[in-house]
Length: 346
View 1 (tube, rainbow, N blue to C red):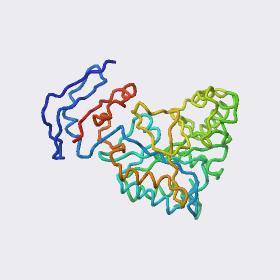
View 2: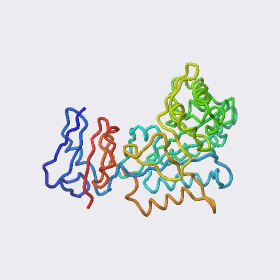
View 3: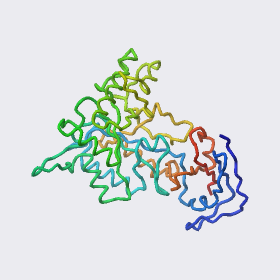
View 4: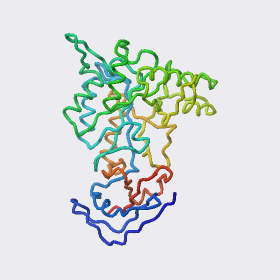
């Protein structure tokens, strides 16, 4: 498919509703029959400084408990994190949509991804009151569902990485919980069958078992759901020659093909369309707030002081808007049918 450069022979275009102006720019169109994009471009508010090659935080959580710790935060702290993200122009997106470039983020907002490892009971707890099932308002899903009701403009999604035969630790409610998640905009991911240390595995068959067996188990409850993202237990990878089996394999007829593998990292991810983005190695930021560990708070502060480093959406799903000085990082192989709009910052 050819790439066609469309030069907009216009000296000044007025941004619809923004009152701003910009000089002639370039649209890259990956379609053989390019459409006239001027009308769409007029809807991009450059005063918002859109940058869809900016960094994205993939946040890593484990336990929602009573106190703040290294691998646990309190329910109140989790609520405060959601409030912070909402009040500072972040917008929750699913990991799948981020990796595949299917995000639909309002103009001026920055996508952020939530992930939970281990499938603990305090991630999703069911209470039974007077014969009726109720989501515990202090578990992660309960907190997010209530926050969504109070802030419908924020979206509510996360990926829960589960392992073993008893995800969320209430065996009588496994089917109910997994179906609730996918029916309400959440995702379920693979965390191996035995929470395995992959660095201690020396053969491909064991890796295929650990990942394929977990897919098989999940699909017993949600048979039509594609389990295609993987959180590496402990962040410990297998030997390099075995890494491909972490992403793709076939366990006794159960095929899996992961579109993303998550590390236990400590910095933001590149944009999905950045040529430095590696789906095999997506870093995550631990959500923590202790005297010793403030990973997430440090990055919140960093982006407050370096707003131009954030991914900032143009609000148009089919156009990728990028400042001129970031153009060299575009991965054109991932653009597909989308257009890329390049502009000069003031």
